[in-house]
Image 1 (spheres, one colour):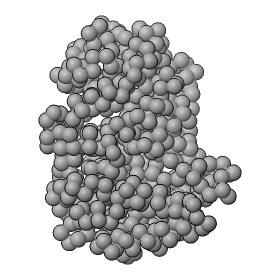
Image 2 (cartoon, helix red, strand yellow):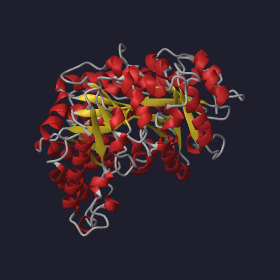
Image 3 (cartoon, one colour):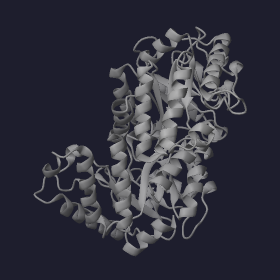
Length: 277
Length: 277
């Protein structure tokens, strides 16, 4: 996890720029290319544009998986390009499987593809999380376990029981993480769209690093972040994807210029809100 | 779901043969080949050997993902080879993500790669399940939602709350599934290792098709299946992976012969236990 933390400090940025490449939303000049080629070019443009402002990038694996084996080549190329730019990569895979299967997924994304961190789903308990931690630890990486997600239907599963499921997930994170520097190597995915839940997760995880989606396009704003801060006023990395990638839509700007500008503004908003590591 | 049901009836078999290819366990003659080539050959041998006895096959995506983009070519080739043999494919991907991301995963595994059914993780609620159903439905396929899994740590999340999480997952399955023939197109993953939990899931899902792992290598046996039956004494497909794939270990048999024999015996055990669709 320390690799990610150091990058955030170096940039003085709590922004994670999410790569959710949807070819139908690419600018006109890329739309006639084959989808894998267009995806690669689009994302390289974004990486270069956001690099000065983002602590790291998050690749949404589904959008590469959708493109078949060639899409996984693109995924590999982009993880390589991110590393070349000094941007750590969070592989947003949300895998959740057990024992040797989880170890195979961990080997794939952290080993073969070379991401720094991964997102993991805790439905199957500790068995589904530990193999990822064991793969991430020796590399200075980490895992972010889904705890309280930002989507509308999350409450029907995560908050409906007594005690609520998100508390169990948070306790799992607390139990499995080990500090490898400033933060434990197990962090939590905690959406910014439900700050009251975020505050309760923070009570259970006073030391953990949060990866917080839901900012921007999903409706979260800077005031939603503060309840998630740790007692030093930090500990939150905020993901923004669509509002950076597609900032050019409806403007005359070049997409990379618009993305860079959106990333800079988001970084500044997060700084103003007090986010830091 | 009906495609799967019809295959099970045609074969009079409740057996799903799981492909969990681990190169270190391949027979000596395959070990000097590159891993992707060895995996393809090993699995083709297994497919041909189990075809007479298995209703369908389940591909564990992690073992292909571990091999990088070339592994996804192998995954595609094996789904094609299964179809050529008339074996429906369950893509065991356990993906759990929302909205457009879930739709991208669904398009990948059901569309691009061509599986008949997928496994899905319900941690994020309905948003994470519906896009898979929408992709599977027009193809006669279906989804199996993780409800009660067979691994040791499953209880710490799935059974620890009040009401237990597995009940919420089961209710989600009941609400989202639509009948496209004999069974609703949303089924449930219910391990055979905890029959008392399986029986409670059956009470909540009297009509649903169960995909039940944990048989064989994980310690479940035929007596563990009966509590999962529906009121007609059916409704359960049982997955067996390692005890078929690696049946040759410690014997002088050819691995395909041993796998075919193990599949035949497992099918017969399941028939004796009364499993049918």
